[in-house]
Length: 123
Image (cartoon, rainbow, N blue to C red):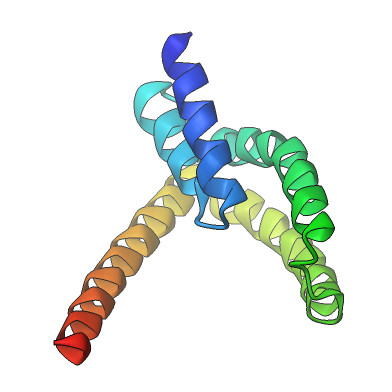
């Protein structure tokens, strides 16, 4: 139970910063709670509804949201979400888990390369 609270806290904090808290939660659910990928994704999405609502309110109050940019992204994101759920039902949990793992690896390598490039440009 304490680990669930810790994972929830860090997922929410990272997600509110726009840094992919879902990845933290998905990894926790898959590795430590033995949850299959599709169920973990569903739990993740339900988890982030209240986190997103609170974050949007705070960012809106601070006038940090550019609504002309957000609205087209949100509409296309909703369409993409519907298509993604449909496709995930077809390809299954095991393949999605492999795609998710590969994506995390690619993003990790990309971040390392970006950090090295920034370090070289600043020094």
